[in-house]
Image (cartoon, rainbow, N blue to C red; front, side, top):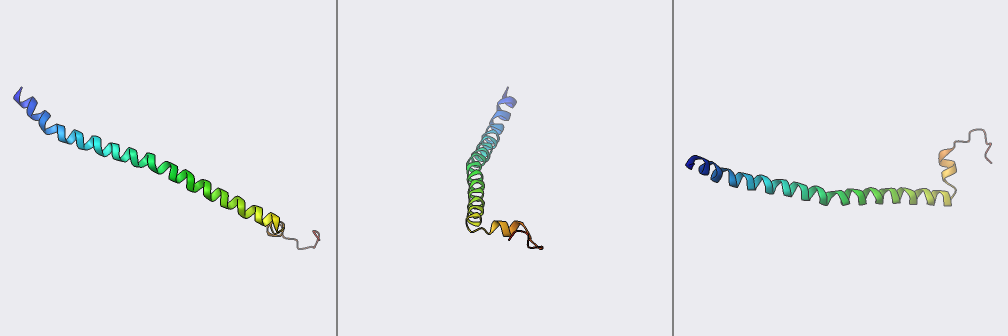
Length: 73
């Protein structure tokens, strides 16, 4: 029984450290997900805004289509 209690005393700090490390990794992962989602949404918003401005200035038509024959005039 003494050997078993000795093993438990040795294992307890290792178990607590592993549990704490796992908790830190989970917390970091959970905290980073909203940051990634928000940055992606912001980039999509910026791209949409650029397309809207291009449409407003009628530049998108000239950027997407190359009119070599002069048919779009």
